[in-house]
Length: 428
Ligand code: GDP
Ligand code: IMO
Ligand code: MG
Image (cartoon, rainbow, N blue to C red; front, side):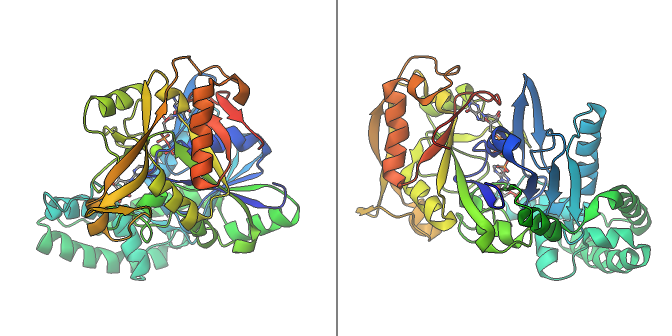
């Protein structure tokens, strides 16, 4: 991967195991870079039995002598970022050098209040089930061109002017529409100034650093957050997040041209999960779904919410391959399927009495989609300590090869447990 960019993206609804895949490939990477989303992400890495959950920091922070970048496309909650950084520092695990783009937007306290108030107002039936981290409102400000960027935190006068304008506007919304208390200026201004002081040593030109690294033949890994079906354009709108988790988002969110991208690695869970509201054609609301949740410990890494569980959806996966240009699949949590007598895999949908092989773009059609399942034979052997593809039971290999033939994409990495060493690399 020298001199090229590899993009790691979630191919489903997030929580596919992107953090563990980034970590598993980390030894060969020089720069790790987050390009979108914010503290709504929760990326779990388990090394030598110790668990780390990254929200804003790239999942490469544990690797010494590497660079970790938070790009312009990310929305940064400085309070959360500084806490995450301090927690790592206290453990002596902040081993990589952190660089934060000055052009990244800041999630301000009013964004979080608005996020929760808007969810409240949406009421039953229209709720998105956001993480409450202020992500949507922060991106709204970015696109309405009034947002506060990290670089603004470094200049007291610019910050004062922008914060006055924003707080005036948001306090009007909060008090007149949402019935919330207005937020005072002075306290927020001094907190924001202190954030600027703390973040200043890390602020740098992310695009330039990556360009220089690529010219020197170094390996750069873009780490997506969320997943394809939560993408603002290509996901199950409006039940999506407010950024572009798809691979193309990496170029925009870091200032790198598409011709530099070598490989797009789609992280795919061996079954499906979703947190929050919105359609999920292969959801299993019965005992089997509960079993998946328990075995797979499917509870949100950010909010602790139980994840909705269901079966692998090849219709959605083929769509993810298309909109991301996935050239390699990292299949995680194969071990969770151990003990399953037969494994349902959705091969097409039925929509209004018609067979639908393609993922419907319109929410109204998707909501009517019922899955057509094929059943693959399960296995009972414990696979958690398998270290090569050949050691997997034949039925598990068949499951992997079924995914390959249905998508036309090779499965080059298989997760058989959450730990760094529970990773099988195959023709990688
Ligand atoms: P991310 O947001 O895509 O990084 O995924 P999360 O960290 O939110 O959720 C993935 C969960 O699955 C975490 O608890 C991981 O430790 C766990 N995990 C990842 N890969 C595997 C695997 O191959 N097997 C098992 N059993 N757990 C895994
Ligand atoms: P990682 O990076 C799973 C979901 C929320 C909600 C919707 C919008 O760990 O895979 P938001 O707070 O972004 O406005 O919420 O998106 N969501 C995630 N689901 N994994 C995530 O991140 C998510 N980030 C947001 O549950 O349905
Ligand atoms: Mg997660």
